[in-house]
Length: 167
Image (cartoon, rainbow, N blue to C red; front, side, top):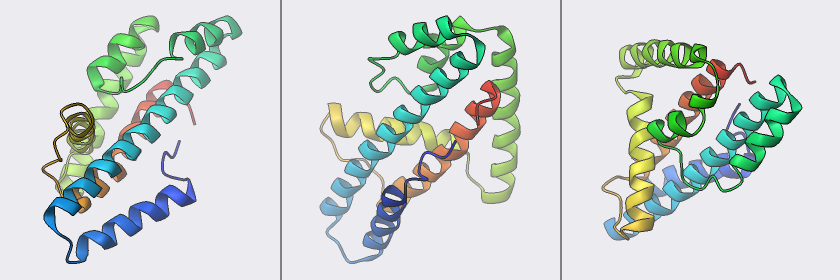
């Protein structure tokens, strides 16, 4: 599942990355980074909701209806602990083991290849969004940092979907 496969959003990421290279005022850059965090986390929320519903629909129609109703008001519950508390407790332990195994493997792979942990990037993105929206503070990140975290979030979501076996 690709959260940023939407052409308009992918183009927006490129525009924002290019804007970061421009000589923008730091306040403008941080504000742009904050808005980009909000957009990226909204895309993640939609993707997680779709993955949950698709997974439940693959199991049974009644489970799909239950999950659809459960996650109608899913706003901003995208932190790892909330994902596990809200959903994984309702499915078998196999998901927890698979999710943990994938997390460890992905982390090792990306730390070795790119020197970054996609799960840390994901957590930072969610944190920056929270600070921007609720505390009304600009994220202490550049637009490039947010773009990297947004792209890393796709890796996290793909790992999550593989654990659920959702394509």
